[in-house]
Image (cartoon, rainbow, N blue to C red; front, side, top):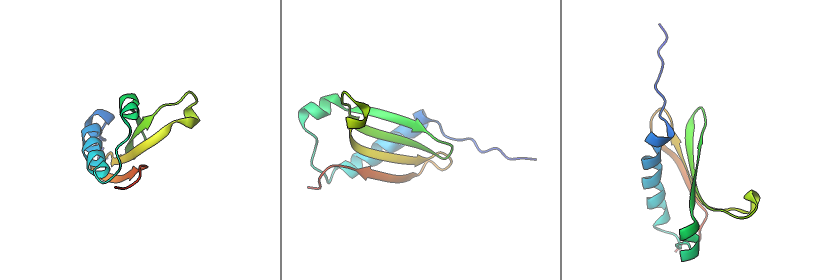
Length: 89
């Protein structure tokens, strides 16, 4: 008999990523008020992980400014990595 593991979906992983991102951003310079108003949450699902990016969009997608990226394991729900692209306090 083959055992199928239920993989987490983006909606289930988003609160996990949100908490980890919030904790990681505590030690960084906050974005400007204008950037805060423009922030967008990008979500991507792979076979192994959910990836959540906070970014400030631009006219050209390649010019968008990524603030943070959190990766959550789809099987365990554990945060694999949180990257923050803001200066440290």
